[in-house]
Image (cartoon, rainbow, N blue to C red; front, side, top):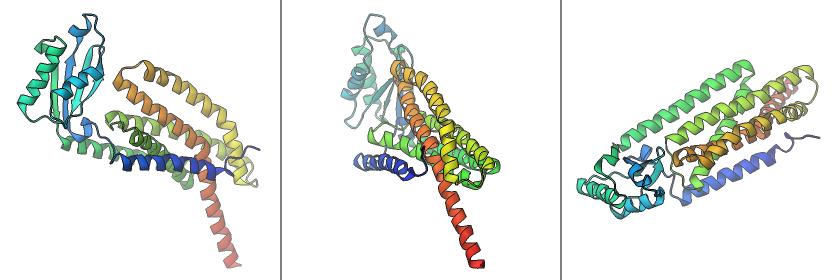
Length: 305
């Protein structure tokens, strides 16, 4: 017998362990690693075409070392490809113009570039990062509330709560991944979270829709059996959709530039978490909430009797 609801404690325990590992990683690493987008700092865009056209291979780690060797000790640069032959160097703010000039000079001399290779330098204030964080949180909350309203209208309030629990699970799994592996949180992470929220809620609604259809046909059957039957019926669809979505994302992760690769990796984690929650957690949460409601009704009837 296909029993998901009966084994729901096991599935929730697996998720809880992963999230707990993320919390431990967060404590060990002294919080999340924030990118320049949130913590503030300096972005320098450099065109490396002159160096690459001479037959040299673009070494991002080598560029980062040049920057680190010619800046104050607290500067920990990250270098990403922004185009085929262009890179973006992200560091903490360098307020001393002399230090900034020395870094630029070292880059130009090491890679035989002229001054026009420095395309753009942006200083990002930490205040901007706080505003960005606030806006991202607001966008996520608004999206969650609107989805809760929509699902409540289409199904019932319990299904809306179940869906929000699953979305919270997916976001926490993604955050745990970032905490454990010390991946800098940037705008790509926000974009990935919002993308996964949309993907996961779509999978979850498919499951809920089938549960509702089956329950309307057999209201006298135990609700847990209806949920198990519905998940079994939609399992193939959920797996096939996830695989077809994962294939191009995995290719982007393998073949894409650094900035795209990090985004793709986050999407992969979110897709796996979203598929897991829609299959193993969503229906079980609905069944659990419905069980609580039915017990309360029985108690009220017993008191009246």
